[in-house]
Amino acid sequence: MKRIVAAGVQIAVHPNDPAANIAKAAAWLRRACAEARPDLVVFPESVTTGFAPALSPRELHRLVDRIPGRLTAEMQRLARRHRVHIVWPTYERGEKPGIVYNSAALIGPDGKIIGVYRKTHPFPTERLAGGGWTTPGVSAEVYETKIGAVGMVICYDGDFPELVRLLAVKGAEIVVRPSAFMRSFDIWEITNCARAYDNHVYWVAVNAVGFDAAGNHYSGGSMIVSPIARKLAQARGGEEIIFAELDPDPIRHLTYGSTAPMCFDHLEDRNLAAYDGVLAPARSRFKPARRIKY
Image: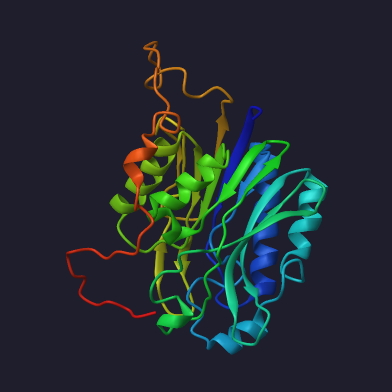
C-alpha cells in the first residue's frame, strides 16, 4: 500500500429519509476533503436510512434501491469530483420484494463502484430469518485499489475473528468497519483493536450517533487502529470527522515509539494443522438470555 490519509465521518441520520441523509453526507464529505485531504472516507452503517428502520422488509425494499442506483449516484459523483475513495454503506434492494441486504459500496476516485460487500453476519434481531429485515451476504472480498488492498465488514461482523482473518489471508491491508454499534464502548474498543492486531491490518471503524427510526441510540466512538493495535484517531460522542495517516511500513517495531524490532507475523506464524474443525457448527456452552432461531 501507499502512504495515505483515511477519514471517518461520524454523523447522525434523518430516519428513513434517504434524500436528506445523502445531502447531509455530501456536505460532511466536502468538509472532510477540505480539512483532512483524505484518500479514503468511510461513513457509518446504513447511513442512508439509519439502522433499525421500523419498517417491514417489503416497505424497506421499496424505500431503498439497487447498487449502483439512486442511493449511490451522488457519492459516485462526489468521489469523482474530489478524487477520493468512499465507503458508502446503505441498505440494498434485493432481487425479490422483501429481500434487503445491509451493504457497503467501495467507490473509486473515478466514481465507479469497485465492489459491494453484503453484511455476512446480521445482528440476530436484524436477520430476516430471525424476524428482522435483512438477508445475509455469503462472501467477503478484498479489492486492490490505488491506495492499497481494502476489505470491508459491517458492525456485528467485527465480532467474528474468522471473517477478518479471511480478509487478511486474501491480502487485506486496510479493513473498514462501518457500524451502528449499540453495545458497550469496551466491546467496541476491544473488537476493533483485536481485529487490527490479530491480522496486522489498518482498521477504520466508523460508528453512528443519534437515533434511528426505532429509537435506538448510537454513541459514536469511531476509531482508526494501526496493525500493532495503536489507536491513531478516536472520536467523541457527537458528529465529527476523524482522520489519520496510514504508514505503509507499520509492523517494523513492537510498539509505537519503540526501537524494539518486531520478529513475528500473525499470518505467517499460524500452525494450520491445529485448526482442523474450526469451521464446524457450534454454540457456546453458556446460554444467552434468549436465542433467536434462524
